[in-house]
Amino acid sequence: MALDTPQDVLIERIGRTGRITLNRPRALNSLTLGMLQTVREALDDWVEDDRVTAVLLTGAGERGLCAGGDIRAIHDDARLGGAGDRAFFRVEYRLNELISRYPKPYVAVMDGITMGGGVGLSAHAAIRVVTERSAVAMPETRIGLVPDVGGSRLLALAPGELGTHLALTATAMTAGDALYCGFADHCLPGSALPALLASEDPVAAVAALAEAAPASGLAAQREWIDHCYAADTVEEIVERLHAADLPEAKEAAEQLLAHSPTMLKVTLAALRRARALPSLAAGLDQEYRVSCAALTHPDLVEGIRAQVVDKDRNPRWNPATLAEVTADDVARFFAVPVDGDLGLAG
Image (cartoon, rainbow, N blue to C red):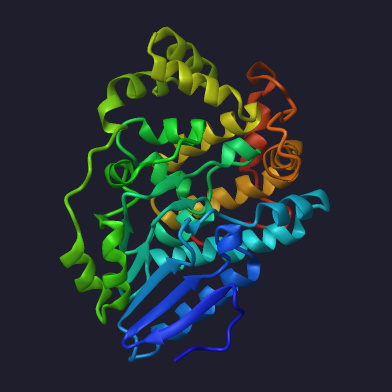
């Protein structure tokens, strides 16, 4: 039974499974407000529909589940003041929280590229599947943003300081890394996905088709990562990375220093705070404050310009150095937005 929905999201009931297919393959299934609203409406409808016993989320095309939000649209709206982006975040974060407590099994297939908003639709699911093609990341610092969609909480709860490393460098996780860091539960070979999609019971199919977890490259680097990123400031993290005298640590420092100094410091503060928060809902509330503040900061528009619009890969951050970003600058990101809090945690 196909429902009357926009073509950029396909909503179907196949047997007893509610199927959600993100359907913008040319844009790597990047999310629009309308797509989020369509997914929310379907999930709300299926809660009350006894014919639906499970939900299966996939992405159209062969490149990935979802590359995140529609970055160009976020850029254009931020230039006009960000009112549309705040509305987008409110819908998105509430959807992320619903997925985390959805009363029916929600199976998310994180095949290929799964980043930003794609993580928000999948990594809070009850059953999270990766494949050998998976590349899972929260790359927000690269474009002048801070990890959101509940990503700050997932990163904060990753083993040791791996989440801090991933957040500050915007490094992508392999399937093994995602499993080790708590972003996924099962690994299926890509060749098994047709069988999963054809199954009448996706929960049973995942259990039957899953393979042993592949090794995590990040797990093997815990010693230097945990030491370097346990520092209290971004400046000290950089110092420790250089002092480690390892090629991997040097590369991490170079990646980190290419990103927005302001967003690096805000990200570190957000992750440290997220560790002490009691729930995903509380984490999303904090992220809403931070994201709204980012909309008013020049680094967001500049970061997207450099990476996505002009693609010169040469952002001019403001301030340009870590030393210029003050504690007051960071604190501003955690203040209540002008239009109020998200209020998920009550």
